[in-house]
Amino acid sequence: FQLLGGRITYVPMDEFAEDMRTDLRGSDLSLANGKSGVVGPRQGFECHYDLQIIIDRRSGAVSQVNGAFHFIPVGVLAGEPVDRALGPQSEFRRALARHSPHDTTVTLWTYPDSFAVFQQLKEELHKMGYATAGRPMFEGSFIGGSSNGSRSSAE
Image (cartoon, rainbow, N blue to C red; front, side, top):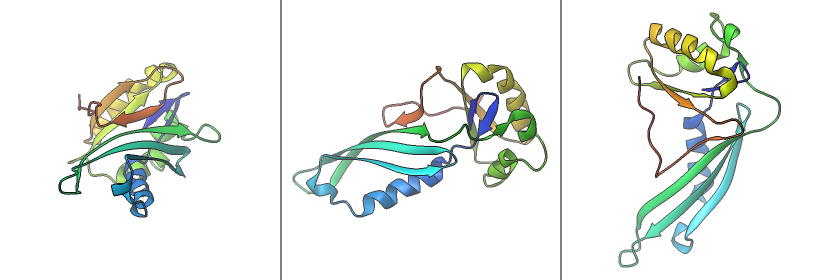
């Protein structure tokens, strides 16, 4: 989830991963050194990705894929105010309901203007049984990741 402007927005990472797989299906990766693309929008974001493909020339098989992605906001500020998100019929709770607390770590990418509500959300997530990870963000930066990045770890 993104915390920005006192609002919380679900970042549909699993859905974007499937969109990227679909986008790559028609590509002949054996002829390319990489692929860039854009998928979405979903939940107010587009996913911009760059992949570098390393092919074992002897076997012709893909030996390694390095990549990076960024979620770029599109349109108006998405999500819902945090106080509404904590209510029983919120988008926040509907998005969480699709993920089991037993095998899900919820990452909260938090921008400076929303640090105050981070702790409140973290406490609520713990009450619901979810492990949480906080990712402080610089103003103007985009949520993203890469094969060289670090994984979120629960607190």
